[in-house]
Image 1: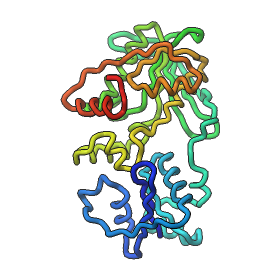
Image 2: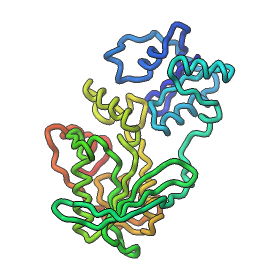
Image 3: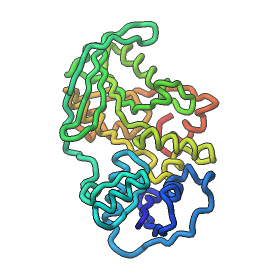
Image 4: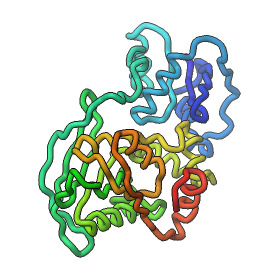
Length: 304
């Protein structure tokens, strides 16, 4: 059995698993958030020779899920592999599932359903329409909240907002996502209308479970970027171009973009949507997110 561990985005460490290694041991090796609970694992034998294409494909599949980028590569008969997975509470996938991993860039976004949605923005009530957008041939689903009746021929005030359950819904003080969401809605309403694209890309695209793993690493002294890298992800795994593609699918070709992130400007431009103006979102730091905002500026290039 071989256990693959994605290290620092681009390198794959292939570790040989011994017969006496348990599934719990493999999970402890895979998940850096468990380092303090299961310290001093190893020593490990690293496999450096041979074809690693399948290993890389398996990690790409995990990252696309999004799951922790670690996989057990177990050669053998399908029935034996399924029995092994069932015994150790693992998910078994055939080789061709991993080899087909990766985002389909050419896929088209279409509206699956929409309905009027009156919403409260501050003390005011705004007329809006919520559109469910799905990518053809895949299960991806994002949402477009169209406030008012924005003119398709004019630059539309737009916000690309990535889902943040902890900040948007629970009011987490570790980030600025909730305040940014509310400030963006107020700015759109104040401009007479616009669009908020709500991207289901929690935790900068690594998913809620991995975001909580990153939080545990932050408690150990890692910053937000270091924690993502430690888990085996890039500092930002989001497909921001999805937002531009959705905006274009809705008929908008020019935008006034509410953002502090230059990568979002590039994402819209790459989708054929001209950004005629960047509208900054100014959120005062607090005692719980001051370091987070500093890292966004220093390491992620946000214009704060």
